[in-house]
Image 1 (tube, rainbow, N blue to C red):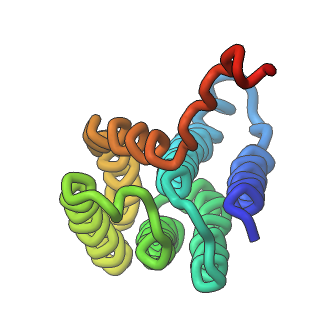
Image 2 (cartoon, rainbow, N blue to C red):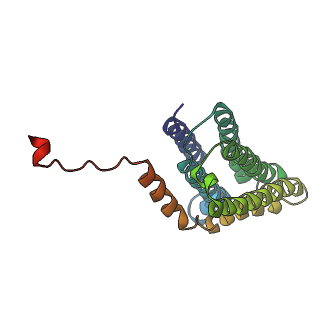
Image 3 (cartoon, rainbow, N blue to C red):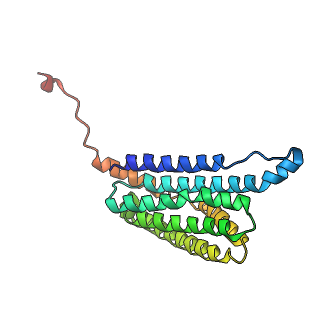
Length: 214
């Protein structure tokens, strides 16, 4: 399978997940401010989950953009990661209907942690241009350390959610914020890519002189 097909399939799954979130929105039975108060928890959970899924998609896209070939192990791990992403609409629906109960918050934090665990395993099973340069490998090691911290935090907060659901909500939102604040790859990546393209490109053909046209 080509990388392009994997990206298209993954984008389609993320699009369906976001659509399922919107389908869970309900019209309140009351009118005015009373109706707004009824749906306020659902709207807050919908907005938070929407941006969490959006950030997961951004991270997924950014990691695959630097990959040059796909293997069968990566296909399976990518499928597992997407499975955990598809649980987020269900977790959001439970959290919207029962915001102070632990199930929705715990499932939301656990899904984020399991997604990143599967996704990190997939990324480590693939080859990327980053892997061939020392400066980029150092940047990658820092990202892996941060990802490990996020995974551990999500799983711990998923357990703590059974004591207080706010732990699960905080873990899911913290995951989104950390991913948004992560530094971009160093500017050397562009130089490395230009050098690789320059080395791979064949030398330009010499313009034909009078003796060549003869």
